Length: 337
Image 1 (spheres, helix red, strand yellow):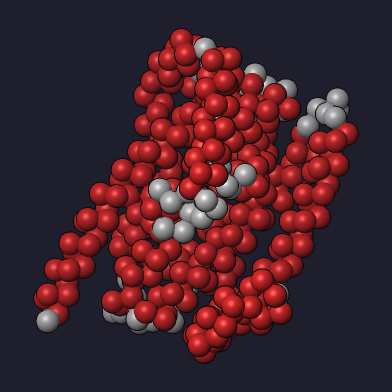
Image 2: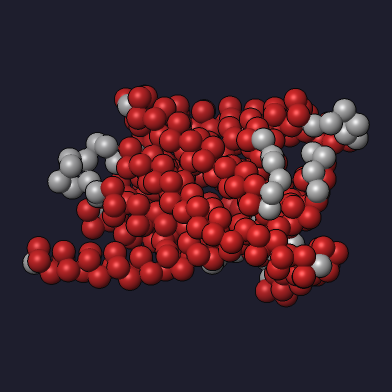
């Protein structure tokens, strides 16, 4: 994507964001923030539990290493938070944190095992997201008001079919590998053959990574299921954020409705991944979803703004942890030498 197109998308998103703000009113939003008050603290701290579940799930992919070699939980936790911050700061691809995770764990796991662990965890993480989205779609069918437009119901049905297909693809990848098959597929696409030829010297590495992924599925199914459950639990905890934000303003939203709204917003955010920082896209999605579920749409906009406050708080924490974990790693290396 060209820089000019990226700037154009950012501008459009900013315009949507400004329009929604003006529609609700800056004064109203400031008033809502005042009513939320100290509730900002548990809303922000809730994400500490989300990261803890994700870090533990990532640790499970490293279980074939001895405890002396395998990174401890707190280091894994810190790297998880830092990598999430870097992902947020690299819009469009959200991949800045993955190379950092590999580099952070390579001294203990080795470059290839670290890369395999990161790829495996990313696949598990993405797989769980799809499960959460499918759950949200199912809840939406049950919770949406009867007067919901037919077009919305049809769109949800199409989304459910697509998500089931993605789940089948993920399970196939974990059972029999995926990276080498992707490379073979690239060779068959005329536009991508040159890219495939450039990757061909790394085929042995892809085979090794595929083997690491399939071994985790076949040899340690308990760890596979535990990692999936932990990642799913992290999303379940995250959905409480919507409940807390709405409650801070004196309104009530049931957990299942919050889960449905949060899951559908995540689907919209991933469909509109090309909008930098989801600016305008996230706000618009929450605004429309709250309205669709029979709630005051301005609550949706405020929910999105509070979510951004939480994002920036954890980004700051993640960037700080990069320095902390980096200095400790350097000290450990010097002591070893």
